Length: 373
Image 1 (cartoon, rainbow, N blue to C red):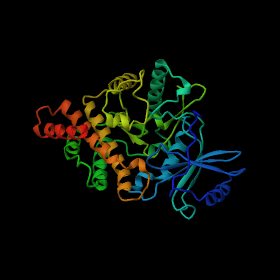
Image 2: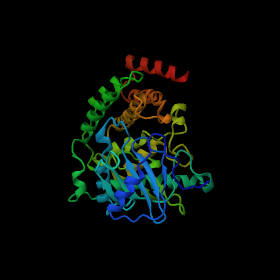
Image 3: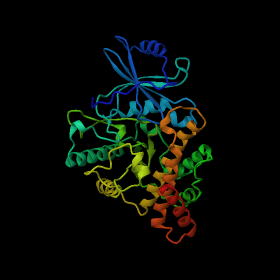
Image 4: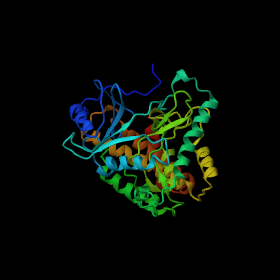
């Protein structure tokens, strides 16, 4: 089995009009030799990602999903321009090839970039590589260091200065994700009413402003096959913006499943953060703050926000499945995960502020009892 991520068969209903794409690529001056081999990557649950492999060039195509609920979250032109302008300062960004905003080609905007060949560290690291505990620790450090490097990019006086509003980011994010959840709710998920109100009541001042990735996970990095703890690529820039780096870190930790987490989180784990050698979530925070010199009086806010934000992302995806806008069976049980995230957010709040809250504690005990069944 290859350790290189190559994609699989294109899912039914998500096929590409290859002839139209090839004609358009040739109009952009791209030389294509041989018959294309098309595969689709299954790791992403948002934008659809395809590999177009020719004899002379290996390409990746990104397009939004059908039945998109939040169009602003699938802005192909923005994702393309962020990477194109970031590449001179952050060389692990893929090389952009061309952007298409002519919907007559395949019915939506899309862009094409060059493929970076390497290992994408998903839920299980390739056993062929025989990672030791020291290797896992080095991988953990290198992935975190790449996030820190991104947060140090000098964006001022460059086109990147226009990708976000900057100051006031924390408040805009809480209010924005609150509204998105309300719009994407289905009848089988919690309201998050208590969590949402707590976040609105505890919004801090921004710690600083920098370029943030906004979807930082192990399965969004590419590792060097020859040195498999080295990060050579960073993917999935659709939500990158100017904002508070602690919000970026809190959002990243929402995906960080530890060995002591419950079975629901373990069953949905999509990165190898449970392995010996990996930091715990608290160790990640300590490492990041030590390396950057930042500090915070209320880390719980950033962690709760990250959990709520992940719940909204999952719910937006589940909304499409619930309304039969996608057939991907991987989304069928997302509503259960959203309940588990609700419990996790309440736990975090309870540990810090709500030890004496009868309402929160009774609800928490009730939902925990249901999840154990």
